[in-house]
Length: 372
Image (cartoon, rainbow, N blue to C red; front, side, top):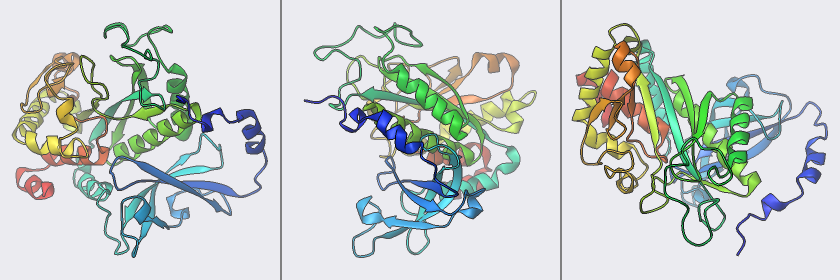
């Protein structure tokens, strides 16, 4: 059985010879979109006569939705609407990566397009200047689905020495992590850090702070870059919330949240009010925090391994076993932000930031309507 992908074993020096060829005034633009699973990313590339300077320079495009779980074969064309542009770290400037919304032929949002509604909500709360930061955990796997770097038979030593670790016997896959970090910086992603996580071969990167709709745009493109970097190395990155059963940590995507009132002096009052609103809508948030309405998170939110129980809501200062953690520094300064630790690693950041804004930032009479 092969544990490394065939494509990663191709001659990369020969590849680079072709990538170094001049391309004249032409520009390669890769359109990226979320497929019908709500988790997978697809992409295809087109040639443009010149380098696009803004989204306004990018034409709409289409794709076969019957091959991505987004339409039927007899009416398969789906529309790609460019919404956010980045530099391409694989083909380099002037080439671009473009994140797109997906619309049906009726120009209504596809079922997996949560950005459309999220953008409308963020427009309603824009005066609060909502800042979000998301902590994306993931696990590296070999082509056989076995965690990268783990013994072929049996298990590694128990958790403890792997978090923020260094050493060949503790940190597995750092080359991928560092290449992804540089790719994000080159592309223009607001990546703010990275570290090895608690389970061996599990890592995390953080994106933000981002304001409003930008959070979802940035995290989705950062995920695309992760999968694309892993492709070059012949390793798979999974966002499964509980990739290994047993006494191993799951993978989440914690979200840090603040409004301008929370960040100002005395903002702890606004943080506490937001937490109480979240307490009342625990069930709705659990449904929105993974693509399968909470089914994925059931395996992760057990009350063990630094998680709260999926059935209960809790909050506390510096408590990593709570649904909502108030950082100790925030508790001391009486202002800042709070962390919701419930979202699963495979959550849609548009869905998460949207329901967060609806619950904690809109007035009571408005948020009931927006949750429907």
